Every structure is written in structure tokens, then in C-alpha cells.
Amino acid sequence: MDTIQKIRDKARARLKTIILPEYDDARVVEAARIIEQEKIAKVVLLTKDKIDPKIKEGYIEEFYALHKAKETDINNVRKLFDEPLYYAAMMTREGKVDGMVAGASHTTPDMARAAIRCIGVDERISIVSSCFIMVVPDCPYGDSGNFIFADCGIIPEPNSRQLACVSLAASELAARILNLAPRVALLSYSTKGSARTKSAEKISEALNLLKEMAPDILADGELQVDAAIVPEVAQIKYPDSPVGGKANVLIFPNLEAGNIGYKLVQRLAKARAIGPLFLGLNKPASDLSRGCLVEDVIDCVAVTSLRAK
Image (cartoon, rainbow, N blue to C red; front, side):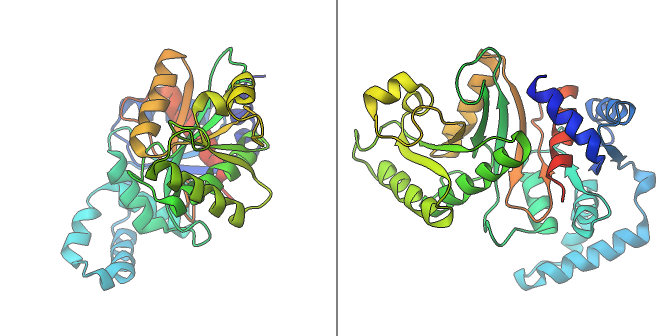
């Protein structure tokens, strides 16, 4: 049974309720139909008739109370709630639904702002980032072609502490959703000091912080990607690496590298890319690429269901 099928089957067993606020996107509407038909999850397609004016006003007041210290104007808040995205995010915050998926017709920054402001940040992780589940066909690397790529959507230039937090959150997702024993590689253009730069120093510091946060996680860095995922190359470049060229969680040094990397693998290797999945929120929320297919929406809903407590 392939990875995608396993994820969908596990979601069926839990049958969580996921809200889809992009009711006017044909791909989302079709995905909702298939999800309900195949009983992958319970879906709330947030059409205008499902938005209760009294509940909306309550959400506006609650949102304003949460953020008024930041000099948020109540009229600006009302404008935000003209967009169903914020109503859906507040429903997720309140627990009326188990998770949220959007992004087919919204940018990642719009989706991230709504999720962060409404759902809130998990204090244990302390930052919001994102990852992709990458399923690469006919691939001997990772775990039979299964990887987590992070961060590919949120933090442009993460510092060492942010990289450590991204690594921890991505590792936990790998274990929870894919049942993988995470093997983390913090990627670079150098391997263990082969280039002495500020970037390499940042990654080395991130590794040390990650080990403090989670001593039991198998991790190494800085590593070039071939040394991270190809055992034969690892033996040549850094034979003492605890990851041993078998990394399945790849942490990119910045957003440019992460975004370019996942799209190259998706297009050239014909991989399935599930996400971006937001990490570090109090409740699960997933973004979608605006170029997503119906299948991508279904897969994001299935993973979001599995992440719900």
C-alpha cells in the first residue's frame, strides 16, 4: 500500500471535521465532494449561507480583544472578517472544527496571517513554519522515497534557533503522520566545515540547539544534500555522520532553497508534495499552492485530519 493511500485510510478511521473556506474555487468544491463520498473526513465548505452574522460579530470582538494591544482598529478587523478565511480560522480556534485547509485562491502570507492571528502559536515550538510531505516514486533514498522538507513556505531567513524549532516540529510530524523514525539533516552547500561561512556557523549552532531541545532525535549538519541522503556519498564526505546518508527530514537553510528544492523534486521527479503544512500552531492548518490539483486538496485534508488531537 502506498503512502498516500495509507494517509487517507488512517484519516477515514478518525473522521475529523475540516473546514474549507474557499467555497468558490472549483477544485476545492470537487475535492470536498470526493472527501465526503470516500469518507476521508467530514467537510465544512464555508459557503456564505453558513456564516452566522451573530457568530461573526462575536468572532470580530474576540479577535479585537486578542490583538488590541497591537493597536488594531476595530474597523480594520471588520474588513478582515469580510474574508471567510478569518471566520474559518476562528472556528478552528474555538474547536467547532478540527482543522482548516485553504490557499487554493489565497497567498501563503494571507493564509499564514489568518492562522497565526486566530489559531495562535504553540508556546512549546514558539514559531510558525511549514513543511511538505514529499513522496518520490521509485526512489531508494529517505524512507523508500518518503521525506519531510522544511521550511518551504514561511520564514525567509531563519536564524539558528528558528532552524532548530523547524527541525523539531518537522521531526514530530514525520513520526506522527508517516510513522517514521526521524533522521534530520540540516542542509547546506558545505559538509562539516568544508566551507567556513556565517551560514555554516548558523547551521552548526542550530544543530547544537536542536540537541538541547530533543537529545534523542537523530540529526546532523551542516550537510550537502548528497551527503545527507546517499549513504555511499556520506561514507566519502563524512563517514562519522550519525545520519549516515539516510536522512528523511531535510531542513533547508532558507526559504529560497526550500521552495526551489521542493518544486524541483515535485516537477522533475514527479513527486507528490502534500502541503505546505503549517507547523507550530495550536490547531492544525494547511496551506495549498495556488497551482494545486483536486488530489492535493484531498491529501492536505487527510493529513490535517491526522494531525488533529
